[in-house]
Image 1 (cartoon, rainbow, N blue to C red):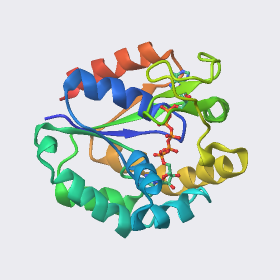
Image 2: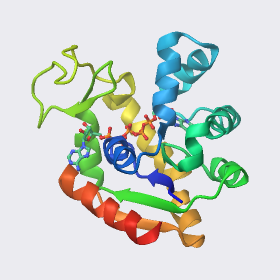
Image 3: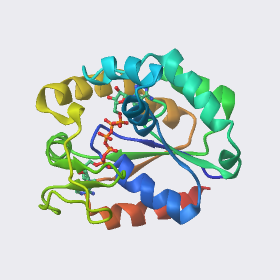
Image 4: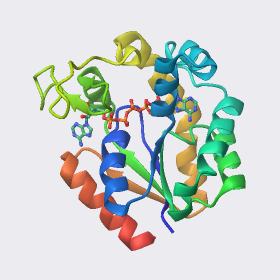
Length: 208
Ligand code: AP5
């Protein structure tokens, strides 16, 4: 069963790889960041609450996220497996996930600190969900839908520092958590996007 969790620092490439891997194995790509951003755009109560945390680079409270994920993982498409990107992000979230389902593999995308900062600073987003980097895509127009690209508010320098601190304190302990369960595999995220994808596929095919 492909019940997958992607771990990695902000900007490590989780979203980029999750899109490719979920298509390959036909499992839903569930990104808590995307869910929260969609709620912010729609102006829901969840979105209003989430924005106040995201803008500071802080985590949305566990009880809020856990409720969202309990509902999402109960949907039919998750019966064939799933790929979680950005969840769990704390030990408490990981324990809540264990109460819902069994994670079969946690893929930890490992990237140097300098690269993380470069990747976040150069990321540009499209309203259609595509994400680019200015070094490989200097145009400010989306290849897929033609819309103008923009920078995520929380990708600005002052917020990125808080996000990296939060990752080190609250999310990095999950590496040990999943390692202790015997389901953690590190992948070298410093390679080209296609090479990282190849390595992740090898790891999944060898473990699930
Ligand atoms: P979220 O959206 O999850 O952000 P994140 O974890 O900080 O991750 P990112 O989306 O920044 O990076 P990524 O690893 O997906 O990298 P990407 O593939 O885009 O969360 C945002 C906020 O929401 C949080 O701060 C928090 O407030 C809240 N939140 C979300 N989930 C939560 C939860 N569970 N609990 C509480 N709060 C939560 O790549 C980055 C860039 O690098 C792109 O430009 C890409 O093109 C480029 N790139 C990717 N791979 C490569 C490569 N191999 N080589 C060169 N460039 C590459």
